[in-house]
Image 1 (cartoon, rainbow, N blue to C red):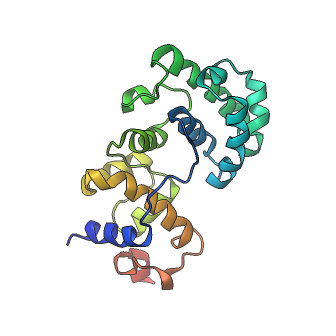
Image 2: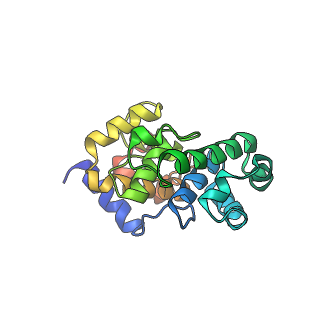
Image 3: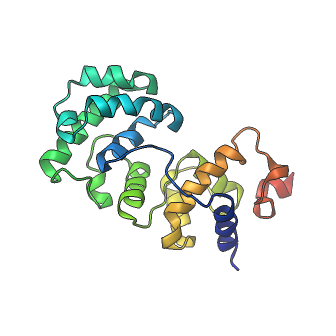
Length: 207
């Protein structure tokens, strides 16, 4: 079995439910939650979004929202002015340009305010089931430690992972890597003695 297949198998066994940690019901709510998660924890976002989605229960209500009111509701997520502005503008674009739906292509998603490749990949994978590689800090760190990729530039790591990941596994692999990065392979104090991926880890083998 190839190295990547073994890693996928181990992560599947440890995290059988490869779900996005962000809570949402509608496609645009996931877009909003991912925007709020930049430089913020998913746990904090999940504390904020219930009140936010209750106050603005439809796409139209977000598109017509007073940015200052959105700012107040998302303040604790950090960078709240930029995030609130992007949320309102992106919802306006969904209404005016994309038939009230989150687009299903990378090119279209990247036209939305506040949406970069990481966000676009997550939306494509979770909403549309497309092959997607979400290169967040966990993914980049662990891919380097396991020798699956080299470098810290998200787009380059994404390209390297796409070359080795089975397309049907890529999106769930990234969700599992996030769980693994929070649970075991943390940035500062990785639990190497408990790690099921030790045989593949470059850093552990050099320790």
